Length: 400
Figure 1 (spheres, rainbow, N blue to C red):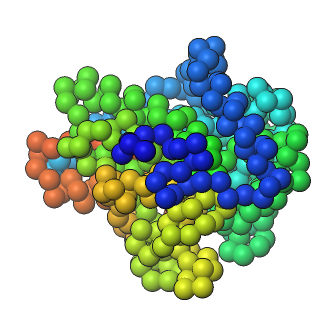
Figure 2: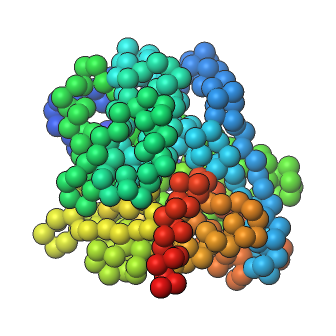
């Protein structure tokens, strides 16, 4: 396999990826892979997807020069790719619309999904409302508490939101329940997985549906600056927004690509979700990749102030490029994230999602370290309306 190629026929990116599911789901995954392979080559499918992305989601998104943030940092010029401006508030709508079209193509009119921060759930609920599908969203009970606004938004658009009370009551458990549902209802149901993770074809397919981010960004930065950026930074949970903006820059060896994981309270067991800082190779929820696990292979507890990054595994394509040294990975702590969240709000009038604030925290560090002739592009993957009450409570508690 070439250094920057598609996965092989078994969905492997080097040693990562693959298909590790119950036999019941093999037929559904094969059906999905075949449907996608046909659809991606059909001009009519691609044209309809472009139409919905423009008319419904609001693409293309803007490339924004964060002038006051740049001035504050005193170094590199900072641009933001404004995925937060999309309908439903994040990049997730790109994938939700595309998979809804595939579900219709396969004759599946019942949709299930998992969600952590709620943005994928909201995007899926919106797509299902648009196309008239039944919609069930699985969400950890803890995440439902800290993302109550998004729970209401999903229900407002007709989705049934099912609380998951097992384990940590976060994203991992939500995926478990969604997969159990899919096994039970595989003939009538399509699972719109929300990130570049899971069994083949999901990592490849979700990446392809988000490539529009990087394709637009490349064209926009060339138009604005007549050159490409020196560094591109994105937060990484499963990794959909990051691989979406990174992919079309992989061949540009002089551009540094940086993924930012959740450092949580610090790199100690149970206090973070930084897989490259504390994980090792394993299999979880259909995929072989870097996973936070103990010596016996049991999944470790995770923590992040952001529900969307609070997950013990990372997308297999990210693990592949990390191994080859093409994408650098670091982490931002909760404290750094909260500071970046407030700083962008105060200086630019843009309230970022807590997930996106991880990328911002790293971008601020890098901008301060680089000279003024350098360009940094940060993927602002979502907006922070959903997080305002949570942050307010955290800040109030810290004042006591």
